[in-house]
Structure formats: C-alpha cells, structure tokens
Image (cartoon, rainbow, N blue to C red; front, side):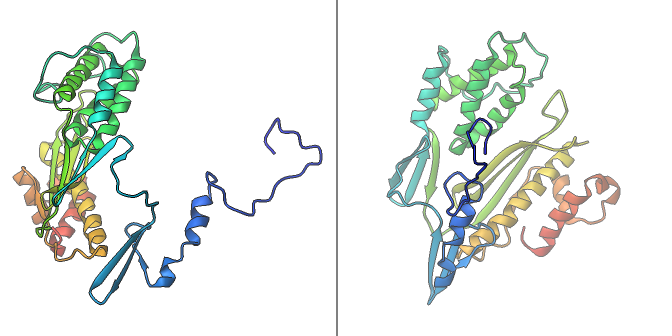
Length: 314
C-alpha cells in the first residue's frame, strides 16, 4: 500500500479489471479488440490501423473514438470545402498573442530576421525567464499547422535554460510575424495525382555554440504536405555537403516508412519517389559508391540512402 494509507490487516487489492490510467490498461483493452477475427489485417507500420480488402473494396479501421465530424480539436480548427480540408490555429494564435502581454506594432515578412545567428552568451540574462519559456513552450503547438514556424521555434527552444535579451528580441520578432499571419495553415486537396515527393534541406553549423547543423524536411502527397520536421543533427558535420547528406538520410528513412504505410492504405505505384536536394555533391554520394575516403565518417547514412536509390525507392 502507498505510504500514509492505513493498512492494519496488511492487505492489498488484486486488480481484476484494467482501469484507465494504469500502465497496462491500453494493452488489455487492445487485446479485446477482435477486428482480426473479422478478416482485418493489422498494419505493421501503424499498430492502430487495420485494413480489409475484398472484391476490389478496401475497408480501413483506425482504433480511435468517433466523435462525429471534426471541427475543433486541441486548438486546431478544421474546415471543409469542395475536395479540400483546411487546418489552422487562428484562435489559438490570437490567444497566445493576447496572453503574452507584449505590444506588437511592426509587420514583418519572415519568422526570424534574415541571417540571424543566436548564441547562448549574446545579451543580458532576462529578469523573468519564465515568460520566455512559457511563450516558446506554447509556440511548439503551432507546428502542427504552421510548417514555416518549425525551424524558428526549434531555434528559440535551444535557449530555454538561460534566455537572454537577444533571444527575447528574436521571439518578439516571431510574435510580430504571427500577428500578421494569424489565419495561415494547411490545405489538403483531393485529386487523382498522388505523387509522393520529399524535400530536404540543412542549415550547416547553424548553432554557434555547438556548430551542429539543422535538418529539415517536408513530404508532399500530391500538393498536400503530410509530414515535416526541423531537428538538430546528432553530430557535427565537416562540410555543408555532409550536413545535406545527413538530411537526405533522415528524409529517406521517413520516405521508406511512408511508402509502406500508404501501401497498407491501398496507395501503390508511388515508386520511384522524387527526392529534392540543392547540393550536387550530396546527390553524387547517393549515386556513386566510390567516394570512400570522403564519406567513410558518415558510413551508415551513406549506405542507407544509397541502398534506397539502388532499390529504386528514391
């Protein structure tokens, strides 16, 4: 029994039924979900997805609770139009701006000032670091619909421990940008063109303190974005080509999973996937297995991406 709970007879309770919140509750509930008996096949790429194909018909079941037509969920506003679904967080954005208590006057065109390089020692330490941490923490939820803020919020999040005046100025710039672009979001368009494309980019030695680079990628199905990310690379890259090739490897891994998942949903004939990268040297590494001296320090990434090219996936 927990400390402080009277237990004079030294008895404990035996759990006979899984309760919500217990560690094994979801697993026990899932075992009672008998869709497999009805002929559904569980996806190996997303265990909550079940698919049944019969007579040219495809039935897809996802283990979620049906609450009707979705219109508002966790700060996301969902709208429906002819063959389009829109996602935005206009209301949530306005609430963040109002709660910040910062007077915003200037309209800016970019989420961060161009060519800005932030570091941990630039400027005075903030008297009230909590306000910076709270604001940046809330901004993280905007990346669900605001793709163009992913890199900015990732950069601002690096200084949560000891934020300084320069970091706060950059944050205010971002808030000004948000104030002038409140209604922006994502549009998912229906159509017959289901071509999958991958775009990757890296910002070489972006962080002054560690000289780590940043990987960024976005996946497009037709004209709709379906996956995106901005993250710090795990190791220091010795050249911009190496940084871009690491970004290619991350994108290749995501493409591999997406192709398998879309295959479960009946979307086939996607290969080869077009990979977009703006570095010719990184593209040569993916095609040419001879650059041993120049690439042996990034061996795993090299072989993974090159393998996917040889397979015809990319």
